[in-house]
Length: 508
Image 1: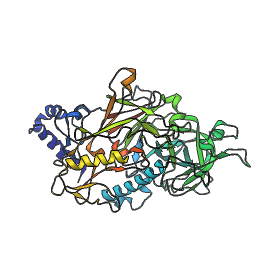
Image 2: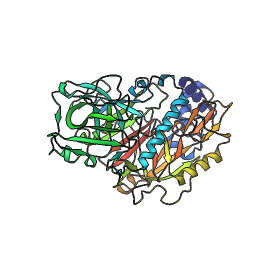
Image 3: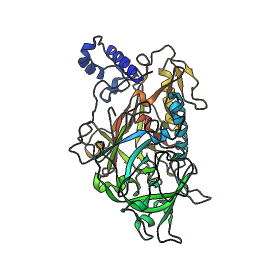
Image 4: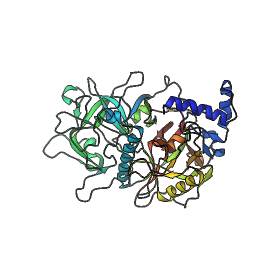
């Protein structure tokens, strides 16, 4: 199905659903749609309480939008992100067969990547007892979104994987003993940069390197080793460089003395097609942490899905005045796993009815397991068993379509047969809302909870053979993950100044 045709059909369907049969009355009808019982794919935050069923799986929100405003007068840096399946993404171009993959095949690959990342995240970044090597939470082919940046003086341009689940910024560097495949250009060459400076053994960048994986044995410069959960690793020099992230208008401010890993020896296939990784976690070596004095220690992004040629946007700096209608939940501390962005989830509503979940369903346990994280590198959403089973039971009770096997071979998604149903206008499935603790509850006497309204595209995916599948799966070790498919068409704000995460439904 063409996305434009789907959008047109859904627009008609939603207008009809709210009693508007004359397209000349569109403006008035859009207002009515916001309060109706039947919602489009872009379910409206203002109307979710009285809504129980989506009307279609592919439609833009018709009313109540929180549109992006001009950032010309804001102290922000705004750049673009590319989904790995975007035709311009190096992760897409690194696979010669990727362009030939169907949507269902791309989804199957995404589910496999998502499962791998779930497994390693659930292992809690543990120390490998046998080798003592730190396992980060990035997994093979983990990158879902990439970011362009320029490094050095004069600048050398690169594309790196964006990841909220890790802290290190690193690039392939010359001399390259073994570098990951990057078909679009050579590795970073420090000898061509006048601003490159290796870290000394007494620098904080060396002595405080994440998990103590740095050394100065036999050399005056600081070397690092960083291992990932799938067996991949990067080894090289801890160094300082000038990094420039370009604004959407092409401008950019060089930022000097950024600590990064100049990787000379990379193993595994985790980042094939990219030049390295930009860690956005809470650790001191992540890029947001290093830019906090420039961009207020706040970053945000607005993700588009894989089935679009548009780019996602990424913002360093405060989005206030840029995005309207933001609500916030506190970042929850997990001292055993400080990198991730944990949030206090309190409940789930399906089809207008809040689920009856055991007390403490989303709590973080004493051993560091459990809890809920917002993660950019996991595609699907994963819920712990109690929550997942309750969601599945509720969805099954409200959907009248026959349950069928997943068209993704070996990947057990819950799917429904919608043969003969126009997926652009007539599919009817229950809405879903996640509930979180409110940042305003204690400070201003505001509501105790805030709602994250999931649009139809955030919850379901239409695949081949007329299969409509739920993009939520059970997790391991009690950890729940709000993946990037649930974040599409939401502005997600990581406000580290006030220790909170915010969101607003929008069109990215």
